[in-house]
Structures are given as structure tokens and as C-alpha cells.
Length: 346
Image (cartoon, rainbow, N blue to C red; front, side, top):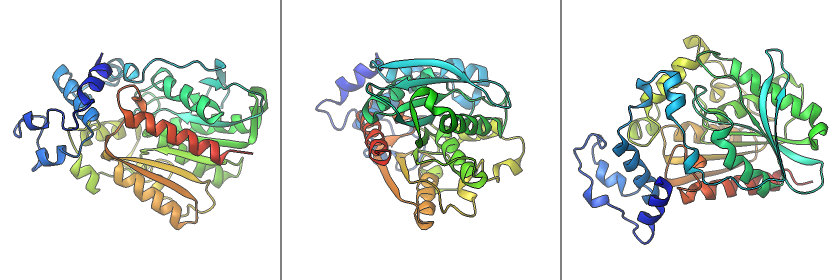
């Protein structure tokens, strides 16, 4: 197993095979890349090398169907922990039923809740991909976690995913008593494209005033349809998520270029972020999305929103999915769970 090999390679070897990397290889294209790689987390570096050795084509060369079949990170999450209750059900919406998976912890309700949206660029990903993180969060935060299987692009383009995300959050607030949820303590959260959907749902709820949310848990969120940040230049290739993959994701998700300028696609472009719920914003050092996530955290702070933010140094995009392979993935889940527990305490 890759995750076992990572642990074996990283134990006691902080500079795992760094000196053996050829500066001119296909995997290392940027100037001074070898020096930069010294800052990469050893476990993440080994994982990237294993993926490169596997010789799989890059995502942007695949069809959506091929990408969905090929991109399975669940083995890197580890074995699922027991949760008091796990239930698959469907939530009604104007566009049709939305599949969800509900994780209920031990204890007596009503519980606070987290409505969670998986990553995958709005094109790939499903409930199984984030099953382990959702289980861990439910147990550690003592929250009901409602994981959402929103419609994917390109079959369902913007704003389908956002509409589904909003519908499930609204249902959780309004009908949450049916799943032992306290409607006054509902948070939204997600990673990557799921982090984008969480920010967007918070914006939509604030704009429409249909319901109130208590917290946002944003893990390396997509916040702007743009590729001109320093982190896009520094991390364009070689760190799992690439610039070309993000272009591929956005091209599948958006109907038009104008969609990308809508705040419900690019929340960083929203004129006013005041009055939004408090937030945790997590970013990764070697991630094209790093700077836009941190820019969104600053915008929230400037608007008077309480923000806890953390950059995981040496880490790559997607590490939240990989707690069995990457120690910092486990730490991130622990941090997110603790932040939720504090924010949603009675």
C-alpha cells in the first residue's frame, strides 16, 4: 500500500530521497525546483513520486468519465472508523432528490451539524471519497455531518452544484430536527471545490435571508476564476493539483466566461462579505489555490468576520483526504473538528 510505504520512508528520514531527484527530469520543470523541494513534506514528496512512477496520464488529458474512474484517493484515507449511525438518504429539491450520507455521533441530540461538500473540481468526487474524513469529524466534533452528493459537471454546469449545496443546507436548518440537529447550530464546510460551495452557500444564505448559518469550515477553497496568483505560478505543476487541471475543471463547470465572474462561482469577487459566519480557512503551501484561499480569509477579516486561518507548510492540495498517508492530513482533520466543536458549542 502506498500509505504504508510513505510511513516507512518518512520515519527517521526527514530528507527522504531528496538528493537523488534529477533536476532535469520531467517531474521537475521549474527553476531552482530542487531547492524548493527541500521544503516539501517528506510524506507528500514520497506520495508524489509514487504517483509519478505509476505513469498515469494527467487529469486534463482525460474525459470526465475517465477521471472519475481513475481518481480514487480513498485508500490514502485509511480504514473507516465506527460512527454511532450512518444513513444514506435523499433530500428533496426543486431540481430533484439530492443523495446525502448522514453521520450521527454517540450521545443524545439535538446535535450541531456540518453540511459537508466534497472536492473534485465540481467534476469528480463522491460520498465515498470523503467517507473517512466525515466519520472522523462526526466523532471528534460531536456533530451530525451531512455529506452531499451534489450534481457534477459537465453534465450539470454552474450553478447546479451551488443550487444543490444550498438546498441541502436549507433542509438541514429547516428539517434538521428529523435527524436530531439543532437548527441554530448548522455549519457548512468543504474542501477545494467543496470549499467553494461552502463559501457560496454562506453568501447565498446571507443574500437571500432564507436561513442562518453558524460557521464555515473552508479547506483550501477555490475562491476565484483566475490563474494569475503567485501560488499558481509557483505550483503550476508537480504537486498533484496543476494549473492545467484547474483550467480543465473550470472549463467543465462554467457555461460561459461571465459565469466565472459571478460571486456564486468566485466568492472572492463578492462586494460585501460582512455579516457572514465565522470561518476556519486552511491552505497548503504547495497548492495553486493557496493565495486565493488566503485572500478570501483576509477579505473576511476586513469585513469584520472572525477567522481562524492556518497554512500547512510543506503540504500539497488534497491532503485533507489522506489522513492515513499524510500526518498533516490527520492534523488538519483534528484542527477542523476542534474548531467546529468550539464554534458550535451551546
